[in-house]
Image (cartoon, rainbow, N blue to C red; front, side, top):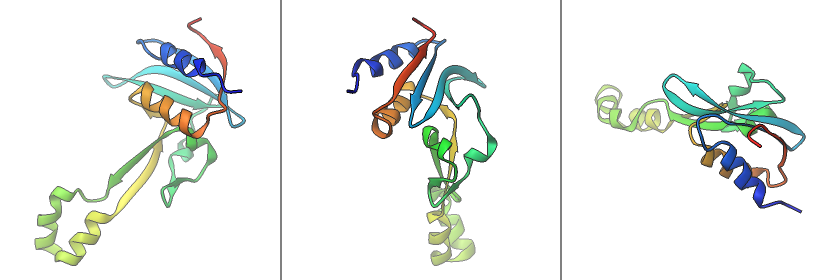
Length: 136
């Protein structure tokens, strides 16, 4: 039976500047840690204690490796829409439309908001269990 308080506990743990919690989801142990990236406060997701570079890759918008399911999907256009008029002058309308429609996807272990991470976990991994909470 799912425990509704686990989501509140995860949110409380990741609320401040410091926080670390280990959870079990879909057979993987996730370590959610507050960290500083440049000058931003982010939440890092380690899968079974690791972050591997090859997990960043995607194909057709889906992760190539199952570990990346816990990471943040980053969608970017190859050419920004605001450059459409410049591209249209250089390459023509049809080519400019195709160039601005191209979208790339990769996965990042960094979440800028703990709430978006929790919403992602809640949606895709409702059977998640807390293994260890360092703030308790």
